[in-house]
Image: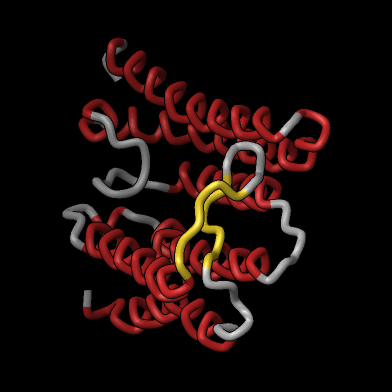
Length: 216
């Protein structure tokens, strides 16, 4: 934990950075700010300004610290490749900065296509995850953690090679679906995103069980 103290401090501050931006924009922001959008890309949930500016970044900071704590206390942490480790450190800070930034822009009247933004973010995340998955070694924090993958290194490696390919292809499909949402409809984009993520999760899990039954 001590070796990562500086990284923890920096990433936590980045997660909380939207608070500073919110304070700067405080007088321009409306008293009620949209903080949730439906499948059609339209705002359907609002929060008061104080919660949007201070509460949301603090909640994300708590999630960030919890995730980092779990990862750094993993009994097999030495098996976690440096790049996936970096991804875990920075995923919440980046989400906090981008999500809160676009929330402020929408509150100030900018025409923001939330569905497109979400599709691109999720797609890029899936591609990055897919790229790192084959490099993962057995651990209890990052990856497809099943009794069979944790019990067999060969099962783990084969499962994550397949999972990596699926997440890369799935990430591309999700990102592209965001640009096609004007033609497919906002709801279709969400269905595609959830369906792709579900398949990218269930197919490797099923493959892992199949390998287990074959003695791998």
